[in-house]
Amino acid sequence: MPTAREALLDAALGALERRPWSAVRMADLAAAARVSRQTLYNEFGSKEGLARALVRQEADTYLQGVRRLLAAPAPPERNLLVLAEWIVTRAASRPVLRALLTGAWDERLPSPRPARAGARPAAVPAQRRADAGPPAPGELVAATAACAGERAAVCELAVRLALSHVVAPVVPSVEWPGDGQCAEPDSWSPITPAMTRLIETILSVETTSPRKIIP
Image 1 (spheres, rainbow, N blue to C red):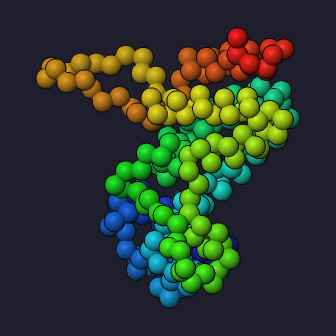
Image 2: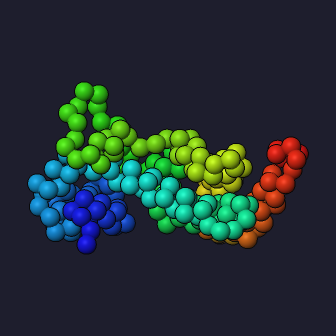
């Protein structure tokens, strides 16, 4: 049974699939989570506090997934390849995570800032952590790499290769419509087989080179 906080965060994520953050109403979220509006404000303090908690949850859930994948009983280079594929696929379906990893926030998403200096600390410990603000993309990449221990450098390489696909995906072919305008590609498509092979080749070089650098 989810806690009231978990139910409210799930309701907020669900609402973002249907409308921009500016149109999300706190009363609707409380109703969807089957809690009172007072409970919502007790947990998050404000809509901005809820936004910070939502973004923090996405970052935490992402890092939990990273740790799980890197701990799998497989050759390290295989785990890194799986991690790269997972990052691209997950970013395709989770716009808040995509924004966290790339810094590309759009008008539909919450883009919370840390709580203002001198603000009264939140009563809920989890909210106090969220109020510190979301991690920057570089911080999240560094945290991802740190999960790989002694292979942090090559893990960071895998992550940055994956994010390059998220930012500028490989588009095998683009049709030109009759009006002369370039058709819009599927900007957040899952990782392609060609990209997977490229990452696998680069990681193979990186993990087997005596100098531990790409020649």
